[in-house]
Length: 309
Image (cartoon, rainbow, N blue to C red; front, side):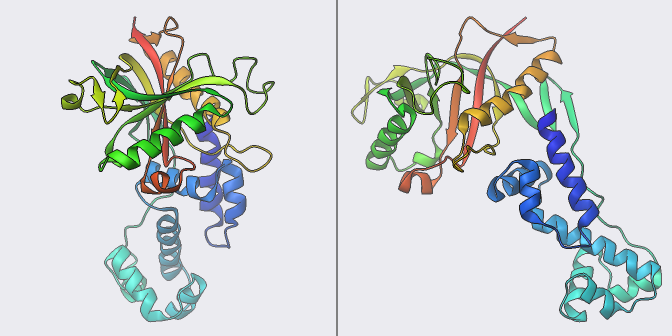
């Protein structure tokens, strides 16, 4: 996928420049991501932070210098950003289980390998580095409360209404599942490129109810409704596309992520798109900061309807 090819180029840049001063602004531009989203995606892919990877990779090259050069331990410590030999020794001991002197004399150590992205299909899932990036989710007998708007900026209005209601009534709001849907699309008068940024259209923001909450007609003043049901392809969406004014372009983020669904369906004999349903859902992951002041969700997933062949 082109999406991961760009990130692979970023890894190559890090691996080739780790001994020099890395231009992080350039790194984030290469991935078309903000600093925060790049670091989140890096952590998701590799189970370590970007900073930790760079630190460990520098130690790998420092160990190579210890073995293959005539430089002193202190010179190598300074070269790789350590203020003194003691801090360098502690870092080597933590990473390799050996002191710099032991590495220099023994010529043996085990170090991290440069990271890469590996894509694969396994058991009906599209995986990246053995993590499910696209997977099938079956929803049965779901019930929701919803906030429906039909106006300009309908998404923002609907989610703000839900946020206000949740703050007034719920203690476990961050543990809930939230999905939204634009029944006739976000830009019913044209495609994303041709339509104006703010178009009047309906939007429904929903919160899933727990099983024991679905047996009532009313939940904190909101009518209980049937929610989404069926089979869906689910994928995390990287929030990494911005408009000319520097604002997050959610629609473009989703367009970029949709390629993962296409690749999944091409490589499976089990599922196909369920075009009869005609709509997809947007799952929002909200943290306490969002409930406090709104803004961008901390996570975002697309649900695209599929059916078994």
